Length: 458
Ligand code: 5GP
Ligand code: SF4
Ligand code: MG
Image (cartoon, rainbow, N blue to C red; front, top):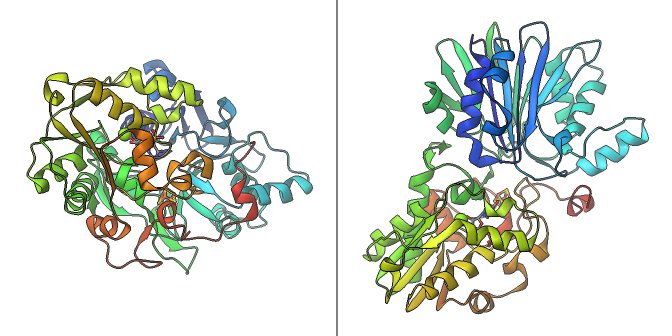
């Protein structure tokens, strides 16, 4: 998911709309914006892309000087309008709206406890659990209520909350999802990714630190820590796949990181071939880096139809397979009679790779060497990237050689764990490397609860 917020700007809704537009790659299932005019919260949400949900008239109807917004990626909870954020709650003591990127791993547990105590939930989302905890907290100030609620939730979260009079942001103690602060004139804004700032003409101020809680209101910005045991474990897939190439996370540019992943991969793979091609869009940067280091020309061997959504989002395997066919086509003249290195960022189920290998061979490639710019994903992610069960992960059930055989490639190379960390620019390996590598190594940066293994509503 992607979150965006702005405090104290005459065009709050409009800017949030642009902000969400640049975060669209982080989720295509739903979008929403909630504004405040200082007295009342008012919002619009809907399923689909930002442009499906909003038009000029709707944006203009959202009057107010501060706003938060969300783009939804199907993670915890199921689909449906009720799960589209920002959630908006009204009560006699005032309204509250919240937008969340990440996944709370003890949400099932907390929800069970809350329901036993009489809470009634409207959604299947883990985010609503936090809303209940905040509303039930005995503290008076919203900031203290939020701190109190955050002391109970575990997992990955980048939150933006807003009342009529203030905006609060919080990042989990491991800082697993990106979140940063920018400024347009005197107005502070908050975004999952820094790419939003270029579009709206904001300047980047700084990243939000793990375990930090920041209040923004008419008095300015006030930052404090709600957790002292903060140690960075940024999601590695943010660098590998999820974020946009023009964003920077913790000072590291995504395109540069991906290019370095490709360079490292070329060193490790040592493949002889005629052309290198990337799978658009997410592995182009890695393919360019690979070609540069391997000394093999980079070519546009595969093109993408931009008007088809991300294949990964589609619900069934059958639809996913059809989606891939609709989306990617080979450039025959480029790959015909050539030994092709095909660089992709990751293998989850193996659907994409299998299809592309056969597509390239049908188009006349003599050999297809698949090189993946991340290690084999053997373990489910509980932190908001939707690879939630072992059965869905081909690398959890099969060896590299078995996967090579299944996808029909002439060779298959995954980047090593050490190579991945080095390429991103991290030193060392293990708990203090600054990155979450759990889907590759099985070393989860947080506790894992028995219930964590049960995705919501499955
Ligand atoms: P597969 O077809 O192996 O299940 O999925 C891997 C492909 O899906 C890669 O090409 C990757 O770019 C793309 N992809 C889409 N969404 C995601 C995601 O959430 N995580 C990962 N790792 N890859 C994804
Ligand atoms: Fe990211 Fe993998 Fe960690 Fe999930 S398990 S947060 S996908 S690095
Ligand atoms: Mg891809």
